[in-house]
Length: 294
Image (cartoon, rainbow, N blue to C red; front, side, top):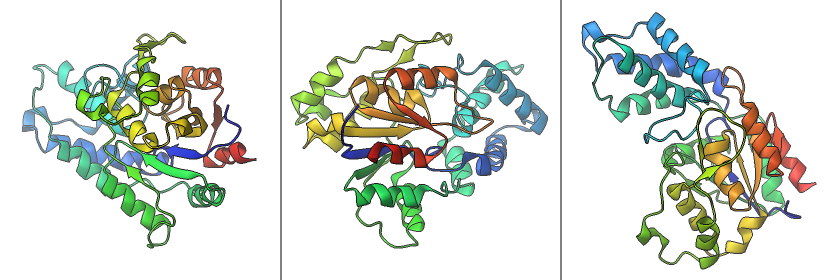
């Protein structure tokens, strides 16, 4: 564990936002968006939608998020993953199967129409960390423009002082190797570190492997620490999903902090176990981050 934290890398959705406030309306908006692309005979009723989500929740975390085909996170870790997996499950179990491709705009529109509010402690915690000269980066799969606007709203509509870089569209779910051309100019210290990361992680058995090598996420890490690779060891990665937010940084030697997910998207025991095994910390909200600067 680092003696002094120099950098905080924050996930956004679920980590900094209140999922319980927005998830029901998001899921209903998503269902309606899916139906707008289906025939009358294929429509997903509210009852069928509930049944599909219940099946996915029951089988998660053994059931994984298969956006990139290889399971990348629990299928019911949050409503955004659940919406995809419930749709996929219902499509393949209908008779006949539904093969319609659902455009990405269905998710984008449902997400934009139902923003999850900031956690109430977010601003005070960020200000306390910035006051200690801790650099803050937000790394998220979400659109960077959306997050930047949300940050300005958090700061009362003014530009965020000092700048908090947003690394959006991070594709942390992608289990892949970095494209060779993206590694040009990346310090050897970082690439050697990533080379040592195993493909999968040995840990609590959940019915599927936990994949660590995520080239897109590594590219973001290399962007943040490319000029000061030694600061990775004094960085703190904070997120609410072990596989998406914390597994790779922990394997590369960074400090980690797990934010507990609220029901019905509860944190799984294996996520807590692996966090503690990596000498990380766990808290119900972002005030737990202040433990690192005492």
